[in-house]
Image (cartoon, rainbow, N blue to C red; front, top):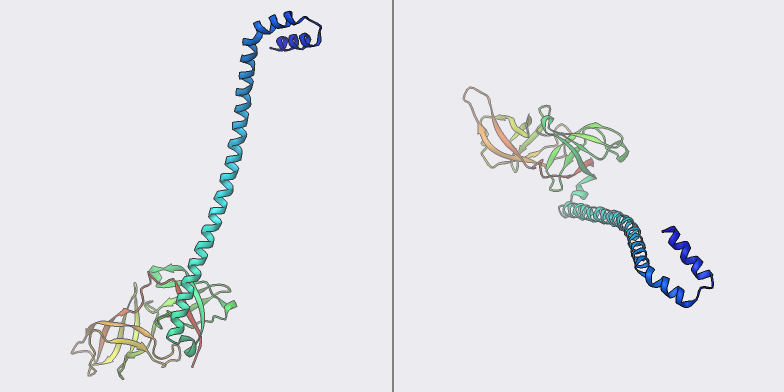
Length: 253
């Protein structure tokens, strides 16, 4: 191939007659066509490689843009959800009754009836602060405080107990956690009439929780003749599987 190229260079630089050049062009044209076609194929091959690299780079850039757009979309959805929760809290006047801090749940320990939230001492959170939903439902209280996080002990935790009463009545008792998201109302005088469907709310006795927070609904009443008090099983007013955001009460009247 090199010799053929040198030959044509010499041919063009020397004073051969047109007839001689024509003859050599005639017999070498098939070789020239083959060489040019091979060159075109090689050129196309390298162009294809460069094109693939460019497409790969463009594809990566598009993926990054798509990921950025997805992140923005998720952030917008979360912001919209937070606004809806805040709006609902405003509608029932929570901000008029309490000083609140909005928090997100970032972890749930089902076995211990505890959850982890994204607010801590830097946000003004302190131990024993009540934790509620936007519907004014009691979820629990702060049990451990860190700089940027806090642990919430749910009302169903076995170590949880607090004073409560039957809504719209003067029947008092103590709500105790049983674990596994279950709780019951204890120490209710036997002569008091309670029934399934009654709602349980907090009282201000003990000073931990403000009065009037919804705790749950009585699902079963247990009364024994030999016992001086009766008990009642309670269904919590919140579903731990569905809640994602909460309010911490940092001050109340």
